[in-house]
Length: 551
Ligand SMILES: Cc1cc2nc3c(=O)[nH]c(=O)nc-3n(C[C@H](O)[C@H](O)[C@H](O)COP(=O)(O)OP(=O)(O)OC[C@H]3O[C@@H](n4cnc5c(N)ncnc54)[C@H](O)[C@@H]3O)c2cc1C
Image (cartoon, rainbow, N blue to C red; front, side):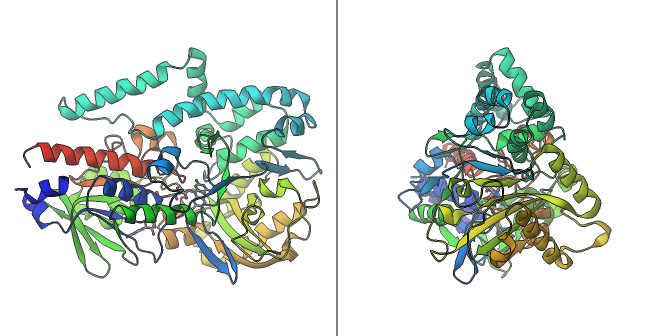
């Protein structure tokens, strides 16, 4: 119906368009946006610089016969509504739960093993007091995580100047937001304020006495967050990792059979099924701006694709400092986005293993090997890791999550062998004294393997192949500036109504016809699909208005 309407348009730019929408980047958010827009009848073209879809959610062979998720490696945040709307299960997606959630070995031989029916008993061996407190803490987190869930699939209130239609729309949005918050008791609102502003370290020290249980939550506060667990705002990052679910179970993490690429392959299949054209090996060189309006894109090949709506799935700083001509942007906007903070402090490895690791704290095989294994036994250890990385580029004792997806998935490698993801923190996005990651990748990769080996002797000897991605590699390979896994740090000044900037939290950029659908928009990073979903809704609403306005 809309397409028919467009052909009757008297708007010159509509008549000249080759497509209704061009989406920059086939990351999972670009694909989600494409699928929703295609479903609504728009003609969608997605242009992706790499030769595969998926962005940071991809599966690739990294050693002959061994495949694994290259960057993102574990699933929870992917929104159930998006799974259902896009019928991702019909497109081949299968997500399974880990048999145990987390395993934290300590150097003294003690450990914590968490998961349904396990956490309390395991914690009680370390501290009866903490075991009696953990359920209450989980409930406190869960109430606030539910608030986040209520906000995930809606645009946050956007700040607008003046009293026009936009101001009225945002006033209603602010009322809706207030209504969600009003459901909380006063005490819960205090808890929300704490979790949005304080450090995870302080909150955890107040609740618990055992290092391992603090480290369990503390890991979520520093993962992808180049900061100490004692940094203000780190409690929010902890919460950000708690709003997900797997197959209806809240707060649980799982595995996509075939790796994270299975999610984006299913999304691409859904988008194509709704008519989207996905062009691979098609990097965007420039966004075409005409009369203050985004009118299309120019590819690296020189080809121009004109479109009524240009939607960006890339990091906002990349979009505005490299792809949109500087003279098309308000100088104040350009100056501010130039200061967008990108810094995750992560180093990502995949290893092919001849055999399963055996941990000194809990030797031999078992369900704990299907868990997220956290090497980082205390908040003090995590704090030192950050200080080290700030001072010398990487931690002497890094924090590592080891995940062995082949414990749950036999499609990744030969049946008698295994693959493991190592997600390592902290490393400096840029090394001190002008040093390059190209000169230190191997040395840091060796350190990561040696660190796991301290807890699981023999691990280093079992490594028969490895892939390493420093922050510089993440930037080169995926366009993740500074290696930032979230397209911009999850700090209070870059969240909610301020993501990517006050005045642009509604997925609309500073030029007409330009939209944001990537993780640099609310609700931020993680394989959620939410920014893609929310951007599609805003684009469709603008499209309908155009239709009503005399088309
Ligand atoms: C190492 C690592 C580990 C992570 N672990 C997890 C995890 O376990 N679980 C989780 O939920 N999240 C995880 N994340 C975060 C999550 O993967 C990202 O937040 C999310 O995938 C980003 O999706 P996106 O679609 O917004 O952007 P991206 O996936 O970054 O997609 C953007 C796309 O744009 C393309 N592009 C860039 N420039 C251009 C251009 N000029 N022209 C055309 N295309 C371009 C890129 O190639 C890319 O395909 C991790 C991320 C990393 C890097």
